[in-house]
Image (spheres, rainbow, N blue to C red):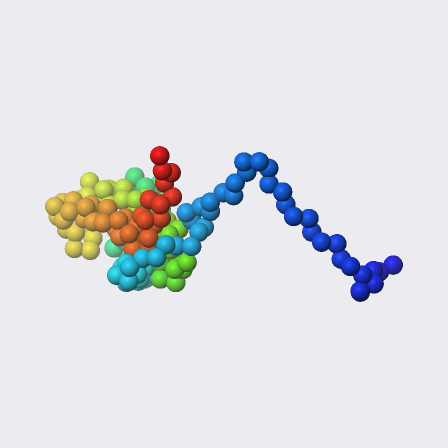
Length: 171
């Protein structure tokens, strides 16, 4: 038998919370991104577009030059490394541009990416590998100081730095 269309439907029971049970605050990664100044938005989009451009060049016109920069100790084939890092740069760059609601999470991932590839920059300096005008040890060494700038840029322009500060437990 089927219930009559006009029969009352059972109402769902409200959930009860035990004494002392409080709702957990959402994660810094899942709550809406905090507002940022317009200059930070411009910086985020610029970083995203730069990453997309760099990623495309990994896959096309500068592929061989990027292969020469892969350290000899890295256990993955040079071409596979360049293709994978190019794809990651395109994905991260595009995400920085279009996923503004998730910009905190994307900013954290981008900053982590810049940290992860830093040993490759150190390897380029230690192994004296030329590439992109970095044809002296002094130039390659100087480039190492740009990597922390990229990390800071990713964290600041996405509001990730502010979100992490707000999420920190207060004493």
